[in-house]
Length: 221
Image (cartoon, rainbow, N blue to C red):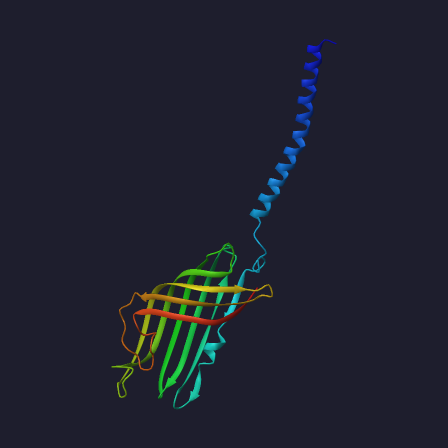
């Protein structure tokens, strides 16, 4: 065989061998890349993976109720329902507060019902979040000239119905056992200008919204 032919033959063999070695290596790299992409697109272990809603209650607000003549006779019921299947980074909540009773024989009643959207800062439904919501408020009681001054009773029974909007920040913790808890700070304003003072109602008869929710616990389903 001539030297030129022999060199050409060696070059062809080397090229074929290199191509044969490169092909499986490329397949392996592509496979590893696909595996990494699949793992990246798969969400981390989620406590809410198979949960669609939750029911929560605030036992601390219930403990605020007293049944003595000096302090008053009133009850606080605070809770809500949350829906988790909308988005793996969001939550739609319907909190409520029902407060009723009497202080110094003056009956009053408060009902707040909210519709809130909570967006979590991380990549899952856990941890810190920001929120925006709407509130319907029903406040019933006796109108007072100044609810902080003795003898300010007018004898006029009034009812306030108003709607408002608010924003807030908070924190939610969800466990794999199904229990969860959280806290919120909300600020906002009612659309209504009705801010007539109601005796022994300190905040809910005002024009603005300011709420601090603590120690709410719930269970997911």
